[in-house]
Length: 330
Image 1 (cartoon, rainbow, N blue to C red):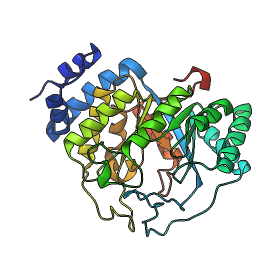
Image 2 (image 1 turned 45 degrees about the vertical axis):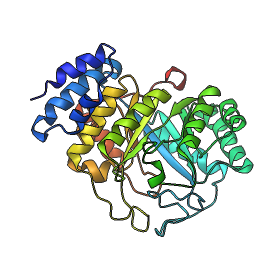
Image 3 (image 1 turned 120 degrees about the horizontal axis):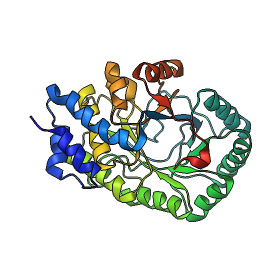
Image 4 (image 1 turned 90 degrees about the vertical axis):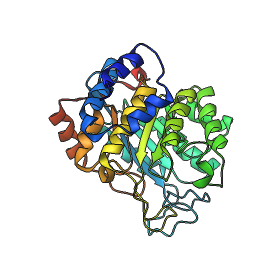
């Protein structure tokens, strides 16, 4: 039996875990899973205590995307029967912020499909952000695709606190998932956000036929990028997408992945994200022992758990909602 507490102590002393240790985490026997979760919680507790950050997404533009990402129902190659609409008006985005505020979300995520924002789309978002910031004391995260440096600066000037552009998978596996943009395109966008003074958010999607070494490489890549917030998505394969029918994940493996990301990125916000309900199922509460953040409400094209159930889950676990002022957040 592996002494997972020793591994946690190593991380807490500032040491990096070896690839062999990382692989041991992903291959942890299920009868040791509670010990692994307890060890990951030691690390999580050091930096985040018993607090959980809440995030809410608004999908401001759905479909019509020219990219060919195999996991995405909004991609140009997808046959999934999703709702499609052009960019929302500013007022609708502001109404979404009101809902996020009611759900005690510390971060409101403004998302739009596409390779990158047009001038009009960027103007709508920046105008909405300025008004939201004048009304609500919450953090704003934007996710609008690939950015140019000047676009990142526009978002920063408007008051955007965080920018999300996921690496999604490892550099090695990237071309198996999409070929319409490169892995380095995504990394460059994260760096443009950082250079503009925006907090970087970048994460992954696990369960896309990658290897365990790919998962380890993803976690290490995000450490190298110094992403402040790391959403860990678990593939919810949608009929009509290129990854239709892919079903590689178990609830216990998902928990091991979350533990790995905590050990490799000990001080960062680790968020259990898309696919949480479908893949963790009845083990959802255990995800908050390594992770310290979740989405409330729906995702982009799939439904999430009711916000009231999320709040009940947190109360049942004895966790506290971390709803602090935007300027106090990393």
